[in-house]
Length: 327
Image 1 (cartoon, one colour):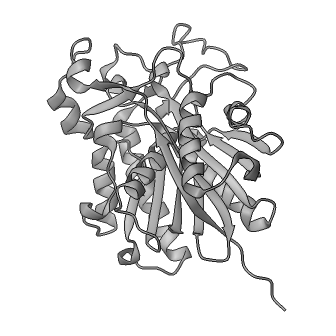
Image 2 (cartoon, rainbow, N blue to C red):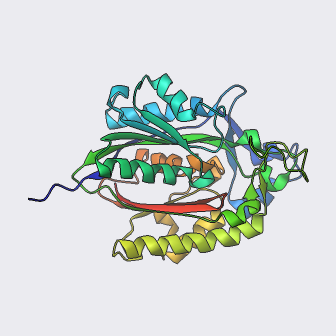
Image 3 (cartoon, rainbow, N blue to C red):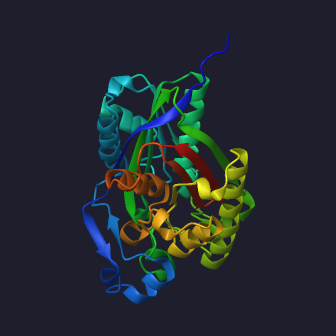
């Protein structure tokens, strides 16, 4: 007698964006840039910025509540909470613990995952493994960031890119097909191409004593590496599932740069009509990017139950990953 196979299925999605919107024209008032310069290089037109005192856990609460409502679950139903973030409220306790308390989900496991822009996919993969192993039946997975707190507003190459936001999904154990596979990778040797060189143990780098908590990036190098890495993980994902690229109904990519998104779509021979794009309205929200795009696609009616979705992301570390799922 064989036991029934368990899958983790996305039962509900949710998202939240801060009220304040910063357009490219707004940025041009205090940074040497323009709407044309930003849009032509990144595809970004505007981004949301957290209000003073508004934290990553604040954004997470809104996104999580909406996902739970969509899934029809309560705080008492949650077995595990995982938050992907690189901008936690405080060093400890984790943002997931802060979120747990605010949701009233006392007693379940809760922890953060820091994989920069790949954080949500790393967290999703972990949640999937907990459900497949039978250790959890209902898992809340959140990707949330207040990246604008790490932006040097005088540095136009990074100031124009980032925004704040949060997205969430509720995973539930199911006998019906859900997440088919996840694939995670990293290359820590490339850390200085995209990083924040400040920490608790390392402190400030000796050669950059005044760096502060801000994002540093070698844009062209990151672009080249990202395109190659995402090509590779897309191929890996399709091969692992015995699928052809034309089997994919929707590509839901990390929203960092429209040119990277277009390059991945071209590799898949996909029309941009089958790609979810929110980078123009959200900017790069790091861990929040993929779940924000997924929630928008679901709530707009574009993504339908039964469709095959490919999620992918690339971020500092370097980290990158993918998830293939039947929604």
